[in-house]
Length: 317
Image (tube, rainbow, N blue to C red; front, side):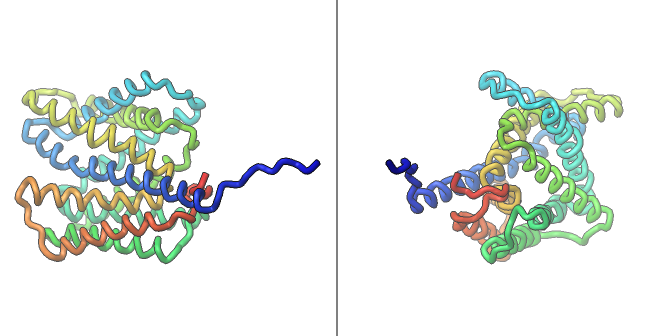
């Protein structure tokens, strides 16, 4: 009697699942980018209410950590090994906290546009490291998407007006990009079974510990700002941190760090578009072309159903 042979899924169905997985991952990364895009507006509103930078970062990460911890308490995901818990806490206390501190330290030198442009060199770092580790392939589609995304970000930001580069600001901006790239690569390397909401809660808790120490060392927190400041800082913690961070990790698990980094280039474009639509900022033709370039890059990244997901496994799982 012949052996029973398990039926293999049709190739079309496998490709369909791969495309669906890729689309979900990219959609999550876009949602994360849009949520991060409101950060400067919420931050400026908090500053106007008298909230200082160390206090703002402390409230941001405490609110995000508490919100995500409550969700973890309801969902009760499997508890990872203590070693992974320690890595996640360190990822927030060192990686995320350092990236945030460097970014805000660079702002006074070159302003938001040029500082953000320097930050968004990080997809190149992530992509090069992924190539060196054999976790990505330099396909024509991927290279074109990377160039379109970076060129689009440059066009959008520089098309809205900029000044001359200050050397200290350049150094801080590039250091921010390196810190963010390291943060993303370490986050991707964590066990895929690590619940992403729990990971976000631990990262935010680690960052909150760091900024608690920073506030205490500087004689704070005083919390002597207007009550409306709590609303802006709390919203920043919930929307532009807890939600944005969690969906980014979830999307990165589906598409890999390199693709997630390229898609996140939608963030500065969205920030500029929000400024145009809600705050009367002007957007010239160069910036419009740049925004179109980023959108095109995101579309190109979805036309790769048969490629690797950046984690060494085929998309069709």
